[in-house]
Length: 158
Image (cartoon, rainbow, N blue to C red; front, side, top):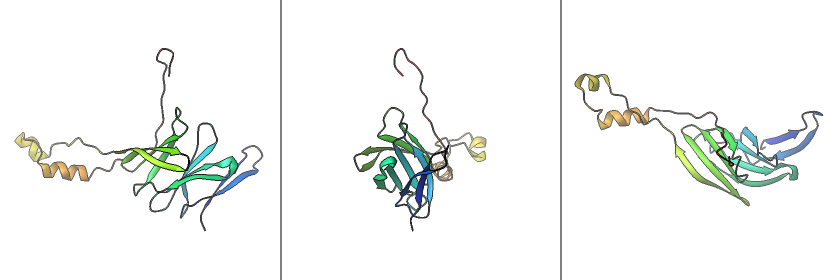
């Protein structure tokens, strides 16, 4: 049986809607859109599936797999209601909802590219070898746990 998302009224504790999902194993993350009309959820399945709902209508808008890198954060774009971002293990991705289509429009593999010199390299005052660089990069495991947007006034625009 697939997990369900329960939305309730925080004051009365009454259930407003139960949304059946296509996720397997559970729901890892939830986020309401800035206008409160949509919910995006991330599944605990192998491919960290993403599902978008128009929750008051009890309607699933879009569903797809995000890939094999775990997702640890979701944030809707405050300037574009059809766009949201996910982050997690070595990645940051922008997603776009167009009707029932969910597309990854931008993907960044996040890893540390600075390669410190090894002890031998420092003593010899030489550059690290390509093997040392590759070994260092393969051992970097950068994880983005959360993200947010910042805004500030520039003249009359934000």
